[in-house]
Amino acid sequence: MSIDFQSLKVSGIKINYYFICKRKLWLFSKGITMENGNDRVLEGSVVHEESYRRENTKELLIDNLIRVDIINKDFVKEVKISSKMKEADKMQLLYYLYYLKQLGIDREGTINYVKEKKIENISLTHDSELLIEDTLKNIKKLLEEKYPPKVEKFPYCKKCSYFEYCYIREE
Ligand code: SF4
Image (cartoon, rainbow, N blue to C red):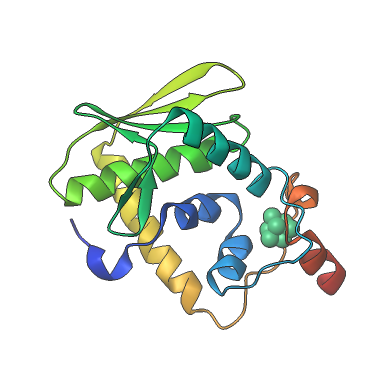
């Protein structure tokens, strides 16, 4: 490990947001929330996932920081409604595998995409460990910035809870 993990570790949702939108991560981390949020893709699916999890899985909160859906002697399993945010989902699970490794726990990962009835296998490799470490360093740098990153136009902006905040203020 080439980083000071204890000082850099963050929650899984921050890793997820980093790969969805850095501005969103910055706003979320500063506690800026939108009362009439419209995060249909992200928060909406989180709500569904939460209810799915309550019914079907046992969550485990580790270090009061990361929340894994299922962990057994071989796997960490994450449940997602759809694969719309595949890259962010994958990085979040890789981060969990990395985090557990720091605690001396080695596991493989799977993501269960409920809608598509698809399971993706995820393994922590040397390269993905380096990517996680770079991501943690970049998140620290990003959150030290006084102002959020500029608005980037993503296809899912309209469904993001910060849509009005981003577009009404900056366009
Ligand atoms: S509206 Fe778009 S640019 Fe603004 S935080 Fe959401 S995803 Fe990022």
